[in-house]
Length: 376
Image (tube, rainbow, N blue to C red; front, side, top):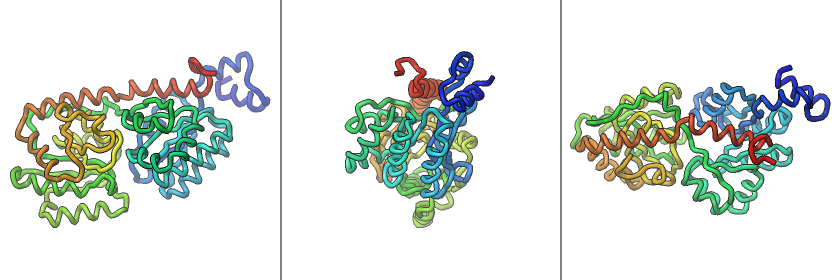
């Protein structure tokens, strides 16, 4: 009898398995329901959670996932329906919790899963969540209190969200280091790369302004802006700014690219621009560090807790094209600085490898399902 058959037999009998069936069930990992955005198959950005699901399946986990619908209302409805109708198919659940309107589905799932008696972990997402929580403290506290565990993917969210829950745990956003060939940038070229979805919170229009300033002293400067169009007008505005500043011919827009192609696009440049106005622990920055790129980023949200200015990156104020262009210029003029940032950045990325993060997820699932050490 397989572990799955043993569990099915127990369900049919109306009680827990015994004897050999009990041993079989103990050998299989907990069954996991993941409620998050699975949008890459429809052209959306691939999330960390999709990588987690893929790796869990490879390790023998039975998964239930939702949702891949692009429409927010359909996605929310699918998550709730899946949580309820397939409650017998999972032992523990993972729910991504965002701010803004997306908070509503996380809140609704927390109520549903609590009522269903399914232990779940809430994963805090997005650099704007602390500000949102400050405005809606009561609802956020109640939502977090329903969870069996609350995980923060960055020290920033860990610290900022402590007033709303007293038992947060750090579960970093990981990268697959093996996928990135680190190349130390000893003498950088003015080849810049930007990698995010085109959305106003990432302030993509700042990038062509930086290129225009750099072009005065570095005539070979070029920029590749990799990312999908979210439809909020950011891509169109970025193109318009580039044309108005006379640098449209220096900037390419290849659109969104599959996750497997990201290392190659990053390797094509030497300096990575992170222009965002709101951020947490951006995976795109971790990917750039893993490649050995020199990172120039705004110092917003969780970025200063991830990167150390002058050691593994250069940090500048948000919405300041002159400061960002000056930082890029420093890297182009100072090979020793570029090499130091490149080497130290790769060392920083090594702390976030999947080999270090996956055991933490597995231990958490065992604990939530009542099988791990210290479980009730």
